[in-house]
Image 1 (cartoon, one colour):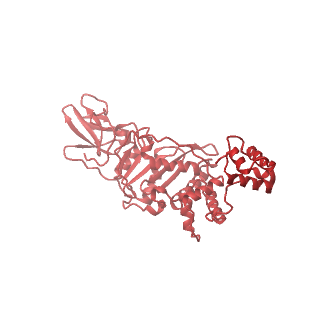
Image 2 (tube, rainbow, N blue to C red; image 1 turned 90 degrees about the vertical axis):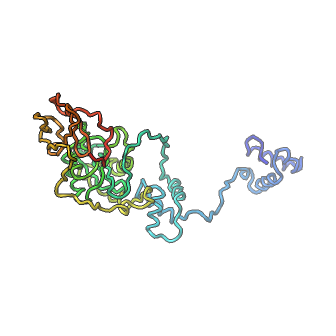
Image 3 (cartoon, helix red, strand yellow; image 1 turned 180 degrees about the vertical axis):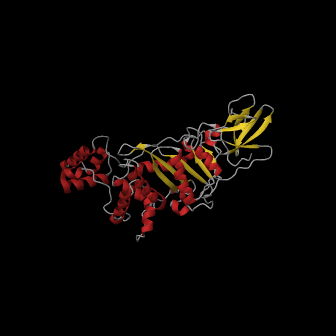
Amino acid sequence: MAWKMVLPMEERIRFVLAVEQREYSIAELCRQYGISRKTGYKWIARYRADGLEGMRERSRRPWHCPHKTSQKWVARIIQQRLQHPRWGPKKIRIILQEQGWPGPIPVASTIGNVLDRAGLVKPRKRRRRRKRSFQGPFSQVQRPNNVWGVDYKGWFRTGDGQRCDPLTVSDLYSRYVLGIKALPNQGYAAARDVFEQLFRHYGLPEIIRSDNGSPFASTSAGGLSRLSVWWILLGIKLELIAPGHPEQNGIHERMHLTLKQEACCPASANHRAQQRRFNKWRKEFNEQRPHEALQMKKPAQMYHRSDRAYPKSLIELSYPPGYQVRRVRTNGEIKWCGRKRFIGEALKGAPVAVKRIDENRSQVYFGSILLGDLHDADSRGLRPSVDVPQTYQPGQNV
């Protein structure tokens, strides 16, 4: 039975003092105070051994625990956490396994408790999961180099005040980060140099998935940019996520969060120092950091170079019979029906095909992409076509 709803220590003192007065039997006093005789004799023994100090509640913690994590394991766990401050228990356990320590390795929950007791865990605010309202017509990622994710991580300024725009490229199947380049801007020339280096080293992907920002896309015909036109002429298909929906490239965006936490905050002194930091982080991410989505394997264990080598020349787009091919001039125009019609500067030098729809209207294609309509009565350039799809689906044939 329990003590009455009063201060427990005061009741215990009154009880033992009443016992010492010997006016009532111990059994009677136990009934008066609402406790069992076993409890009464326990407090009488403590009072006679320790006096009033014996009336305090004692810890119920066991003196010995045969399953307690040894200090050697605690030291190893804390050492790994200090070396990798943002690695969780699962990743730390994989590293401890690879180091080959003797004896059973603590499970992830035990490692988490060790980190928590050491004050190395920062509580995170839980976020409510939101139902996704859009599912794009994206390809299922099935193998390395099937789909590459590309984007610019949010820009920041280095210690010398210069703007830094990190261009990032990753393989969405293996999570392997193919490249991170600290660039001064998001211009076409700098981005193309980066992709040429990657294509020469890793080969070509089948698909590139990006957002609608420059230099990957534009507001011109077909949403094409000079960079995306070049990709298509290399035989690479395009996938553009919906505006305002970065979660559609979620694998790549999640990598950006880790990159920001571990290699950008705070920024380095200048571009050169920041690039060295990016290179070091990329090596650790690819070769040392276990990835939970890969069953705790490392991205380097899952990735291999593409079988599609970087070609020496661009492919020639072919169109079915009935289409008239025109090459876009340096000013973005083609000649059609005896007049110059503007198509888009992004397509300069590229072959487009014109298909007559009716006696007054023609449609213009670049590969499988419908760019728009040319009206014979209109001397201007392209007009939006009612047949233009909202999202470009790769793999369609003209």
